[in-house]
Length: 444
Image (cartoon, rainbow, N blue to C red):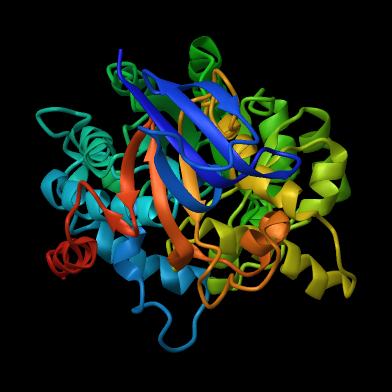
C-alpha cells in the first residue's frame, strides 16, 4: 500500500477555507483529513497556498490546441473557423496526436486540471480507412493522459453525417464509422484503466441521424457511462433541425431517449424555454465553455436558467484558446453580469464546485472533486502570494481563486497522491513549452 501525507497551508473544504489541514493518503485515496494542524508534521510535504480539489476539464478537443494564435487573426464565424480546424485534423496520425495530446494534457496539469473529458472524433485514417487497431487514435489519447499524469474520460464520439440528410464530406470521413452500430462495435473494444474511463458522445444532431441517436444512448446506458453531446451551439443548427424534423435539437434528443442524469449537453447556447425545461427536468447536465464560446462568437448560454431548472453545470476549455479552468469559472459569472447588468449570480464556492465535484461527476468520476475521506487524492494548490493573489485574507481564498487567480498561479498538482506538478514545474514532462511547440510544428 502506497502512502503519502500532505500538509495544506490553507484548504477549501467545500463550504469554507481552513488553515492547517493534514491530508493522509493511501493507495490514491484520501484516508483522513485533519484540521487545526498549525505546522507540517515530520514526513508531511507542505503545499503552501490555497489547496482545492483537482479541477475537472469536462470538454476538450486536444488537437484544437494547434489552432491557438492562428484562428484569432482576422474576421470570420464559427463556420470559417471550422474549415481551419478540419485542415489540422487532416494532418493527425496516432503518433502526432499522441505527442500533441501529451503536451496539452501536461499544460492542463500545470493549470491544476487533474481530469479531462476528451470529446474524441478523429478515429480513422484518410478516407475513413480504419487503422490496424481501429482504436489507435483513442489509445493514443489514453496513453498521452497517463504520461502527463492526469485522468481521462475518453468520450468516444459518434459522427456520421455532414448535416441533416448529408453524407460526410471529405474531411469528415475520418470521423465516421458508417453507422451507430459500427461505432458501438468499435467502442466496445476500448478498455478502462486506473486513470481512464470510457464514455460516449453524440457529436451533434446534425452529425448523427435521428434514427441512430437511440443506439448511442443505449450503448451508454448499458454501461452506465457518461454521454455528452454538442447542443445548440449555433442558431444555424437549430434552424436546420427545425426544417428537417419540426423540432429543436433538445426536443429531438428527448424524443430519442438521449437526455438524462448521465448526459451532458455541451454549450447549450441557443435554447427555448421548453428546451431549458426539458434539460432541467431530466437532470441533463450542461457544460459551459465560456472562453471558447466568446472566442468563436457563439453567444452567452442561459446557464443561470438551466441550473435553476435542475441542470448541473460543469466547465470545459473546449478549443483551448486558453487552458484555465479558473478563467472559465470567472467568465461564466462575468458573462452573466454583462448580459443582465447585475452581479452575483453564483458565489465563488458555487463556481468552484462546477470546476471540481460537478465537473468530475459529468465525466463519471463521482468519487473525485472533494477533499474528504474516501475521495480520490487529487489536489490543486494556488499561490496566495503572486501579483494577482497577494493581499486578500486567506479566509477569502475561494473568492481570490475565482476572481483573481489563473492557471499561472498553480503551484502544485497532485493526482492519486502523486505530485505531478511541484513548484510550478511538471514532474513527468520536463519542458512542456518545448513539447507543445514541437507537437504543433509537426502538424504544419
